[in-house]
Length: 84
Image (cartoon, rainbow, N blue to C red; front, side, top):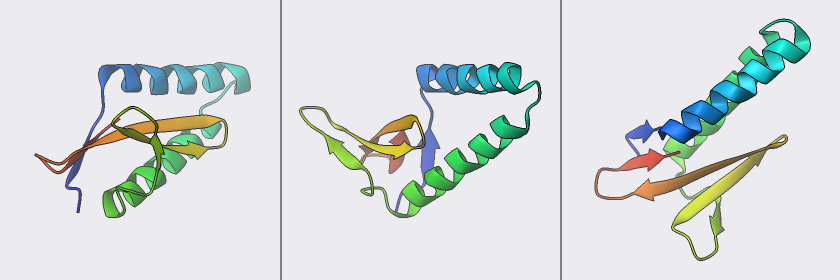
């Protein structure tokens, strides 16, 4: 079982840019909050089932698709963590 998630700086930046885009596009934060909640549900699933995502060929990573977004992650077996 995975114990924690470690977000990369680029993943956090991308997530912020996505939310900023939708905040401006919609004029409020409602959709960004819903989208963040959906991302968090996916992360919760990955904590329980870390091999749920599809394998990226020739790279030590996996991915899941949610709406128009692809969530890439890799398992770090030495510390039982996921890196996004």
